[in-house]
Length: 465
Image (cartoon, rainbow, N blue to C red; front, side, top):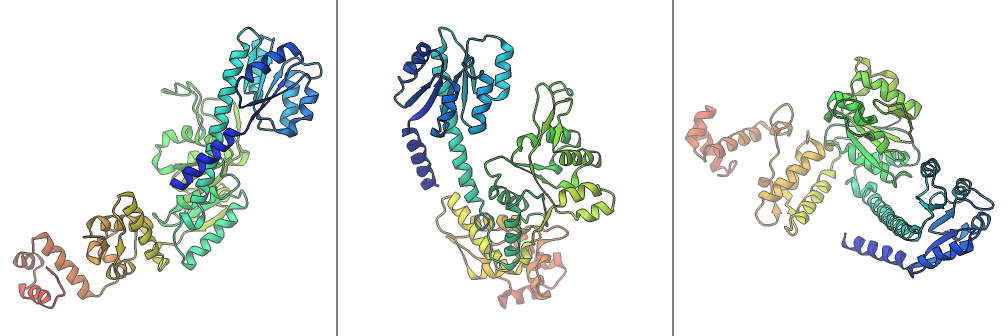
């Protein structure tokens, strides 16, 4: 992380050492000279002046960082020149400087996308100075964000974000690779805790959309009455409490990817609205009329069988086919073999680093115990188990006794393991001995067995007290 930060500092500071190229397009030589002189007080600025739009267009190959244009030029009006520049360079900021004080002119240009609109008066040069400074700083921030998003993409490379080498996981990597090469919708299924959101993020940050937003929405966590507003946004006054216009998650994800987790929980009445948005690639905010065009990559996830949900009438068939796209079914952790140990080591190392605990190793008896368990809570459960073991272990070695599996869905955790009846008996007796402070008589009474049975198991070291 420190290396990345240092590299970022070098990149940003090297870029700040380059001259900041500004084109001034002004047909009045005297006024153009004033603007040139004032901006040139900053030694970082490299100013080039033009008296008409045609010469400016002919020099755009020099890639200016900023262009200022007079609204009334001999060959172009301000809006026409703006459009011509945009045909060549879609990103360069453009400031319009004009003697026109009509609000409608300014509003129209700002709607087109000009960075600023400045009226010619005694304060123009100072306003321009501040505008250029602000635009330059914004450009620096954008570069930082782009760099950090590239770093994030590296973090979410398949092998870095999803730990494991099992054949089952290699098949998932192959499907994810196919998903990154197109904009096809992706539907991710799998048991709770298998890492569906991690897979969704990895697909986004390895695709062409990685520079845009990844927006995750848990459909099960939003109250039914708020979902429409949360997804599609609302206008001011659309309902009680709507004090300002609020863009929805789809707008936030425009150009990028939206991840709808637990899609099967979406109410039927809203499924039709979602379907329309996906079909038309546009939305209308709650309480509004303005149409918002969308370019969003959809990734959905569920732990349920969507085909079964359709059959039972709980999920629209037409929406099912719309979101199905490329299916990725994540394997349960118990199906991934030795990936358990790879993940366990990763979680132990991560926890030790975050808590400044030094190196923590996992003993062989602990590794054997981890491999015998079937993890009904999948990767999420393993992470919790390892973190607890790291806290409970003496020294820097996790042993079998440090590992405690939490209660699993549908019964106690130890029932999830495949053991002999004798092993289960030992586990039960150990549990109650611990509960009753190693009181053999109380334990025997509670379990309705002879105390001699317990003493014998202790003597044979089947139970350690």
